[in-house]
Amino acid sequence: MRLLFPPSPPRQPCAVAQPFGSRSWAYVPLLGLLAAVALEPEGLSAAMMPDAVRIPVIKEHPGDIPPDAALFRHGTHATFVCAVCHPATFPAYPLGFTHKEMNEGRFCATCHDGKASTAIAEMTCEACHAKP
Image 1 (cartoon, one colour):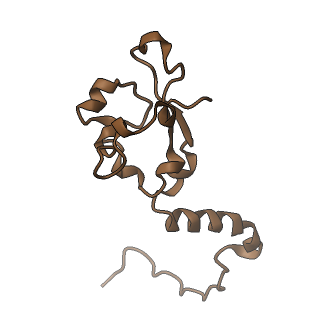
Image 2: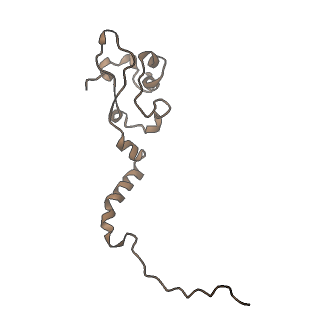
Image 3: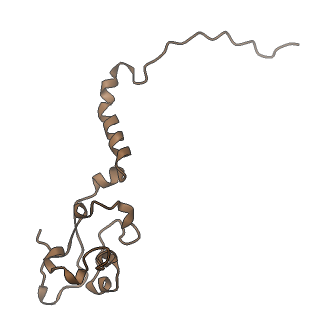
């Protein structure tokens, strides 16, 4: 029997390499970031989310009262993960809506219905329409 290709030379044992080389200390910040993302259910998206979001005004209030647009703070809702509200109740971008829509049980009133949380009708205007 004749071989078409010559046999491969025998393999030499290779040296054991360190996983990060001699500069493993340079990976400590990266490993810390990866650990934080792994331990935090929201990962990087929550860290990148702005704490305060102004709800765009789509219909002016009568007499300009209250004068400021509603202000949503992610920090006061930190007991929930993003998927509770996004994208089912709110899109991942600021969306304007009216009190009429909330009275129908949409947007904020999904939770602020008097059962899961304080009803919107029981809150003061300044609770949401806060000054900047």
